[in-house]
Structures are given as structure tokens and as C-alpha cells.
Image 1 (tube, rainbow, N blue to C red):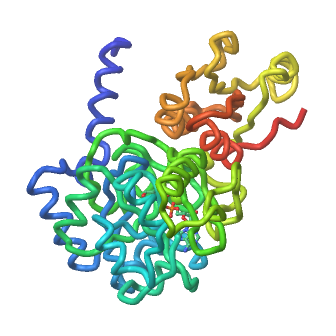
Image 2: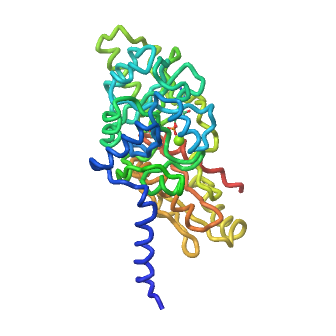
Image 3: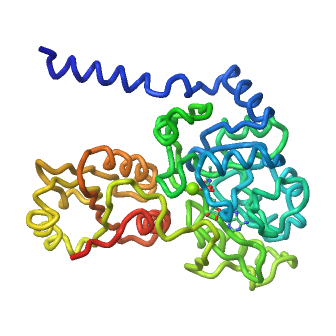
Length: 360
Ligand code: TXA
Ligand code: MG
């Protein structure tokens, strides 16, 4: 008979080898292999400070086409183009406006994507038929090494199947693609854990299309400071409106979702939720994701305890949704965070897309 401990060890060993033929260390040999695949028009997965990306040479149609095919992504949903610096960004766009200049200085390299008017030289597929292109300059060492060695921009959406939870580790990427899996450069867990802020700079006012670690307040502050410093190149209308959020072509209502039905609920409904679990949905064990130690469930249910600070919560969110998905329960319940500062709006945005309200 195998003891619990021995069984546990055997399992750990199997897990370690899962996908290992696809997952490469990002050492000199791993990077060289990844770059040669990109040069051959192939797709490679790599870490960024936000989430793992599924990258291909942004200048080549047949390479970018492979990203859409592998992800199962609708062709009307444009991709983010990753650059090394402002100089490479300029080469991708018609103009790099003053507001972009200021924001790049303040937040690049980092988790801010700017939507600008597209120039020549990129595959038309990255823009999915739009006259604009989303440009991001990542800070992650491995992402930067890849772009530098390729010498040109890399188009990369998050490295998950369309509509699913974004990956924040190399193992998550493997779990998305299995035998179709491309080479994955392993950079451990992503530092931010949520996708970049997407800011549209093509209209009369900057608009946040997707909230992220660079908040509207931070953007507003950087632009204002520059205005106060006597910059004549930006006007007051360029200050990003608070809480602005407009539809983006790729921001489907249901997104970032685990496969198990996932519900969210506010703290004030905890009493009713408990009753609902015990009676209705109930009798079947559920997984609860909670950042409040007073809101927890005992056996046979599972409680995943989350950090109660925004940075810690964001970093752990997608891994927790995946863990919940594998708990073998019929439903996942997530306690809604109530805070408004820092990364919380981005967390709440992703939860709203990954879950439904509990049908009480
Ligand atoms: O943090 C990130 O941004 C990650 C890492 C890999 O860099 N990438 C990522 O890509 O999240 P993706 O494809 O999953 O999300 C791209 C978002 C979508 O919501 C898409 O609609 C929007 O950016 N987007 C891309 N190009 C756009 C454009 N030209 N106009 C408006 N939105 C655009
Ligand atoms: Mg995505």
C-alpha cells in the first residue's frame, strides 16, 4: 500500500515533469532557441511583468496568423505589439504624440499599453483591420532580451486560449495548449499578475480601455505635472477622465474565465450565500476564494485564502482561479473586493468578466 506521503511525492514528481519538454530555462541557450524560432516565423511563449505572452514577429503576416490560430482568437480582436523602447515604438506608428512622449517617459518600460495611429511595417493582422495599433514596452528582462535579439517588435496577446484565464506561470501556459504547446521560456511567476493598462491616445481625450497597474490617477498625475511644468504641447483636454472606460474591440463581457461556473458576491450577502451553499447549489462542495479570514467555509468545501492587499491579490488572482478550477467542484464563489484604490479596480474588472452574479 502506498502511504499518503509517498503518493504525494510521486504526484509532485509527475507534476514537475508535466510539459517539461516545452518549458525551457531562459538562459543563453533557451533565448537563442526562442529567437531562432521567432526568426523562422514561429510562435514562442514568454514571461512579461504582467502575464505570459504568446509572441511572434509583428512584421510577418504568416507568423501573426499563427497566434490567432493557436489561441482560437477572433480575427477582429487586435494584438498588442511589444517594443524595446520609444524609438522602436515610433517606427510602428504614424505619430508618437506629446502625451505618448510624457507617458512613455513616466511609465515605460512597464505595464502601460498605448493605442496609437498605426504606421507601416507591421503585419496588418496585428491591428485586425483598425487604423490603430496597441504598443507596449515591457520591463521584464526576458521579454526585453527577446525583442532586443530579434531586433524588431513582437506581437503578443496573453498566452491562453481565447476567453480563458491569463497565464502567470510557464506551467499555466502549458496547461492551456498541451500537445499544441509552443516553446515556453520560463521566468517564474509574473510580478504584476494582471494584464497591462490599455490607454487609447487616438481621440480628443485619452481613454482607459482596460484598467491595470498604471491607474487613471497615475496617468492623470503624470500629464498634469507636465502641464504645470509649462509644457505647451499638451492641453487640459488630454487629462484622462476619472473612471473612464470605453469598449475595446477585444474586451468581451465574459473573459478571463475559469471553466467551472464562477460566481461573485458582495460581503453583505454572505449570510444568504451560506444558506444557498448549504441548501440549493449546495450539497455539492464549492470552492470559495476569499480575502477576508471571517469569510471561509469548512469541509467538504475548499477555501482559497487570498492576500488582502491589492498588489498581493492581483498577483495571485489568476493562479487562484486555475487552482479553483482544478478542485473538482461544480462552482466557484468569489468574495468581491470592495476597495477602490490602486490595483483594486483592475482586479474588480477582471472578476466581473470571469464570474457571474450569484443567482440568489
Ligand atoms: O499585459 C499585457 O498587455 C499582456 C502581455 C502579454 O503583454 N498582453 C495582453 O494581450 O493582455 P491581449 O491580446 O490578451 O489583450 C490586448 C488588449 C485587448 O483587449 C485588445 O482588444 C486591446 O488590447 N487592443 C489591442 N489593439 C488595440 C487597438 N488597436 N485598439 C483598441 N484596443 C486594442
Ligand atoms: Mg488576453
